[in-house]
Image 1 (cartoon, helix red, strand yellow):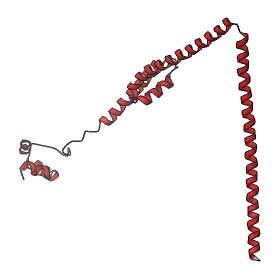
Image 2 (spheres, rainbow, N blue to C red):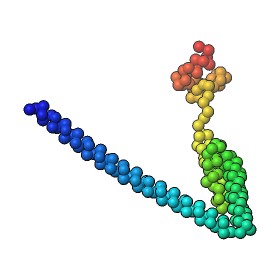
Image 3 (cartoon, rainbow, N blue to C red):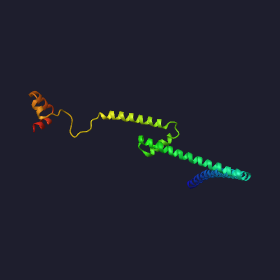
Image 4 (cartoon, rainbow, N blue to C red):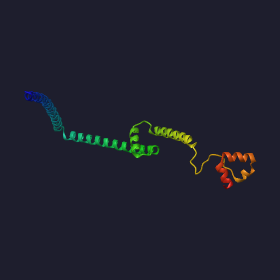
Length: 188
């Protein structure tokens, strides 16, 4: 009897899976059908546009067709000229930005962003002034730190003559405060 219950349960689970897969297949089929309709509509619109262009060309006289071709060629040249002018301007700006940033890729990116600005040179001068001020402040701040030396700079460094010129009490005080240096001077 228990075996029949397991078989019944498996059958119900399989039925649920079949219903879910059928639902998914139905949705996929609907999406494919919709995609096919959209593709057909696009193909039809493209074909109509091409047909209308052909009809227009057929109606135009030879002079009008030549004028249309000349206009299209002039537009293409204008686009190319504008593109070349932009490239040249970006290259010139990149040279100027390179002095501030130092990295070619970043400089080109910044130059591309600055292209078309009303006054690029003023913007770059402002960048350079701000950079120089920040660099000067950092140099002043970190210039206060002494450079690392070979020996220690703590304590007074004196010569044998200066030690001889000291009074007995000063000499004892120096020996107590700087015993290593005192022994070094005295040769011990």
